[in-house]
Length: 151
Image 1 (cartoon, rainbow, N blue to C red):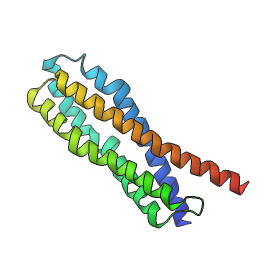
Image 2 (image 1 turned 90 degrees about the vertical axis):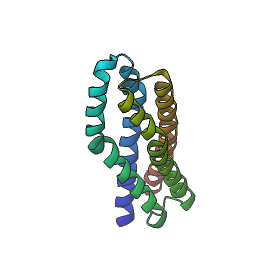
Image 3 (image 1 turned 90 degrees about the horizontal axis):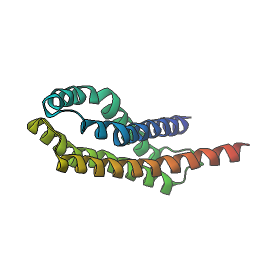
C-alpha cells in the first residue's frame, strides 16, 4: 500500500513538474524577452516570490518521492527504473539550483534579460524538459505494465 502511494505521488509530481518546465520553456522565458528592461526587474521579483508553491515545493516532493521509490516501490517497478527516475529528477533539481539560480540572480542584479541570460535559461530549461520527459516516460511505462499485469 505505502509503495503504491509513493509511486502515485512520484508519478503525479513528475508529470506536474514536467508540465511546469515545459510551460517555462515554451512560454515564460520567451515572454520575458518582450518585457522592457524597466518592467522586467519588478516582474522578475514577483516571479521569484511566487516560485515556491508552484515550482519549488512540487520539485522537492518529486525529488523525495522518486528517491523513496528506490526503497519502497511496487512489484511492477524494477530497481533500475526507480534509480534512473530518481537520477533524472535529482539532476533537474541540481541543474535548477546550480545553473539556473545564478542566471536568475544576474537578471535581478541587471534588472534586464540580456542575450547570455536568455540563452542560458533556455538551454537549462531544454535540458530539464528532456530529463523530465524521460522520467515521465519510464513512470508511464510502469503504470501501463501494472495495468496489463492486473488485467
